[in-house]
Image (cartoon, rainbow, N blue to C red; front, side, top):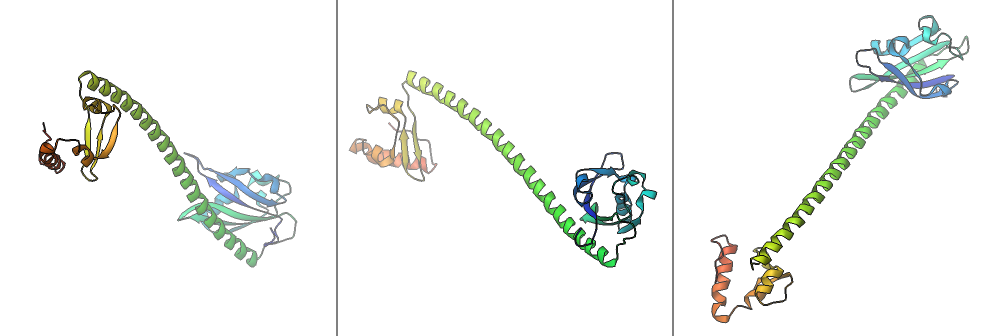
Length: 240
């Protein structure tokens, strides 16, 4: 409004319609028409439709003669200057300025300024589209995380139930579980195994050497060699 000495100005965004001409929405309007922000016109009833079809700036004097939808607006349109803007090669809207006072006219400098504003509008549209896509991606990611979290919680519950059944079966069979991480030498025994070994019946994690220290000295070398061979993957552990 200020740059072009216009009395109203705004942005129209094209909302395509399946099987129809689409609709131009006015997300931003300033000046005498400011109260019309959020409104719009069908493509085939709006000067913006001509601008998009021709892909070039257009100047309309007394546009109500050609577009009945704007013939009775208040304040009336005396002159409208419109410039299209694009996202890539696709036209997505127009920037426009209006004069309502009879006898006033736009000039070439006004056109140059609105064309510059249209470039800003195109950049803003691309940024807004990218942000919308990022927000959509974030929402989708959060939804997948929630679904994955629920699945993991369900799997964890099933695992706890399975572990409990295994513990009961091992207790009934007088068996225990012994594990070894070859990379770190970390060794663990469950409560059942410690009970069978005459130790405190709790789960224990300790270096394997501490376990081997409990083996009789006459058997210790063979036990160490058997554990090492199994850790290398050479053969199953069979040790008496």
